[in-house]
Image (cartoon, rainbow, N blue to C red; front, top):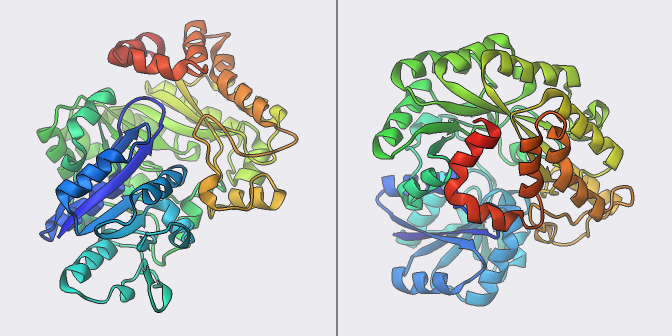
Length: 464
């Protein structure tokens, strides 16, 4: 069977394509069972004409869309512009899982996949091939003519991640993606996150299926994938993009001990503050870790605890960054502005905490109310977002739809644009100036213009 994956990544900041692990895994499983796959990547401005040409040329048996919540509005436009499609259509991803009512709201969409999709999609493809019953595939909801929408139950989370093939990278034309990301190859060695942040989709996803949610692959399997990727592509660094690479200390110890014997490439990871101390950082540094990205999100202890479900003290966060610094590991902090019930005074505490710990680099995002999450429910209850289809709640990562009297939109945008400048203006004025330009309204055009020199700029300004 011929399966066409359609991945909308429209209007994203930065001017570079990215790799989507979910589609890569789906494609790998289908190929392992003898099916053919192709990707149509929709990037830049919205334009359905190239997809129409791909459909006419490839003539797929199944069209599989994958979209995060901010991109679902473009999926709707695609269906409005190109429906009827010449093949069965299905939508998967976090949005379909957490807002399954989208199946009814998108005219022409035949099915959605809820939760992990490797084997549900394979079973759907096999059923289409053999003329089997599409209405009994767990994790799949299907529109029918006589029964309406058949809502099949979900299966348990997959326990053995080592039983899956490595993700299909060739589907995405992977080398240019590596080159555009400072020559870095991305990996994910686990699924799920053990924490319950109210703004994140993990707690909602965990409830959609039964079984163990947080799972790691074996270290042997991780190293085998690294060898395969570094042997096929020109790579200078690796990024292990797990939600929390340090969630299991036994995994960290075994992986680092074996990695430093087999690979000399530097790598970066994501971690929670409470999982980092001097000992863990020394182990990571000895293995080649050069940067750790750590979520702060808000600098207010009470706001983090009461609204975000994050129970760390500011001193514990500062100690995690200090442990990285003592080990010689660069740090990046993740932060968010515009949370429901936040005020400019509360956000100032985020600026103050970052100014105190001085990460080597910072990321600031504007809160987005992901369907199914606890904070999206708060937004609905408080009237901060319209009670409408969830795909209308997103305006891009540099704007907000929330209407909050104590933190109006114009103030959220001002805080967003000036955050990094205010963090660094006293101790690192060159870095502050860079961020001032980066987050300005004209920053997107500048990013694109300077893209060929971004390796040099990062080393000059960030020191990494």
